[in-house]
Length: 382
Ligand code: SF4
Image (cartoon, rainbow, N blue to C red; front, side):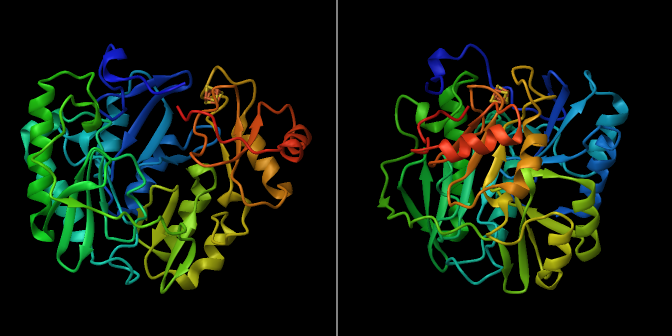
């Protein structure tokens, strides 16, 4: 099974936001986009208050470093809309859906990479929001900014930047390694120009989501070919004076938030369902004690689950509840383990993984893990 092409799509994308919630079986889903910038704990607390009455309240972290609330009323009540907007996480009503930016999360913090990309990330967000035409980009269009370490260029991006030295970078388009070498200071204007060209070339056709779907390549003839560095290991635990914590199942829960609030006033959401907490390496034990993962031996660095019940009617089980029961007895191994509620296997890793399909119990899941030979890696990720 492959993703539909633009010709096969009948409608525009349905990526959710406050202005356009997606309605699932358990209610409305709203996504907030920090655009690769730090999020205040106060804002996260505001979001948590909105879902506090749910059976299992949580803020979901997405694979693009966004925040998601689900199980909200359909339609959203004005009170909930106002409460979400009061967090400051929707700084532009017109550009809410297009602030899809992923950047090297440790840029400027750990000395790796060629430069500190944080000013570029902020400048890109400002430029995006200031440009009325770019509100037409669509919710699936992705900008990726990599400081040269190669940690985020593996995302299938539409427009990207990779730093190639101090003050130098190559701007890339369509997920390829061909692009244009420019001074770092010229990266944002070049990205904006290319984004403009994309909007003009699609001419309002909302079925074209990505640069790679254009009939002709975007931009002038490329002038640079980048040797993309291999992706480094995902950071976890102490990084100098900072700490990276993985959030089990990508669900940030009230106890996690309470522990974070004791050690910081802001976090950076990574595209790996983890958080960078600046100047908090010493608080690692406290954060681990609250259920966040900070060691590579934690089952939560490998164990994942699809939405399952109650959010997905196709599922026969609460996949996440089962994963929580499974975590303490998960057999050792290197491969990710993914619990799916049905054969669609949503959210499976792009790499090899251990497939746990609709298990009726933890024992059944353990049997599937033991019997999983060879591991699966051939399923589509919807
Ligand atoms: S794998 Fe099946 S049960 Fe799980 S979220 Fe996807 S459709 Fe729903």
